[in-house]
Image (cartoon, rainbow, N blue to C red; front, top):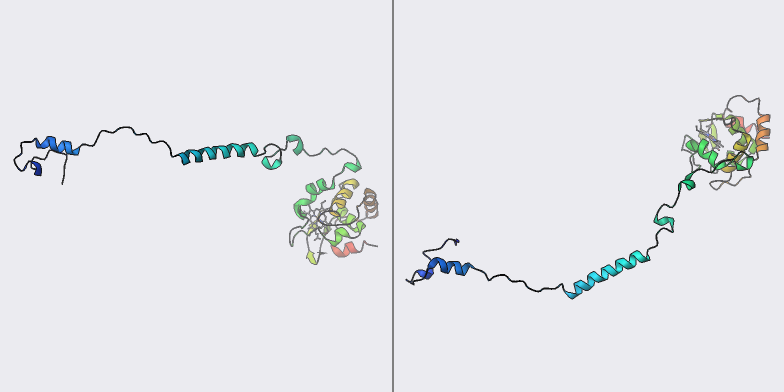
Length: 215
Ligand code: HEC
């Protein structure tokens, strides 16, 4: 086992040579003095770095920013503020009423909730007789009601407290949304039906009572 300690019994002084054994061992142990070497980066590596830098600059310069909303939300507070609804029949927004009064049950998709809230999309009651539809909204329904082949037994609240224009607007909306195509309903129709059914107190007792309304 070699150690750094001077070896008095090493093989070099075994033959009686008059040499300082410890100095000789120390000399053998030394490395050459270090000196600084010139080793530049390989040229291809330098070019590679340059190419990356140029590509980065090109990418930043060529990427559009601030124009399309895909590169960030460009909306401002005024965009998000709901449109001011002025008093006046024409300004009533059926979609807005739907979002406020109906969406919780019948859903934004108009598909309702399976088995609980019937769909409005493609529903015969929505596309059918406008007087019956108006009556559903004016007085509500509670009882067995078949919609698109499924029987529902829930409670549709009455919206008779809404003004005629708003009922007309929301019905016109549900008759033209989700692929539905039925004629719009006017406030005058709602007013007439409100008058014609004023004897009705409480909700209709299901589909049979509604069908009886149709001429
Ligand atoms: C609390 C939940 C609820 C809300 C809110 C509600 N509905 Fe309904 N709606 C029902 C239920 C439940 C039925 C089925 C009633 C039954 O089974 O007798 C129904 C039935 C209907 C029907 C007849 C069946 C059909 O699917 O075509 C129409 C039309 C309708 N709702 C329109 C509306 C509109 C328009 C609004 C908003 C102004 C609205 N509903 C708000 C629960 C709701």
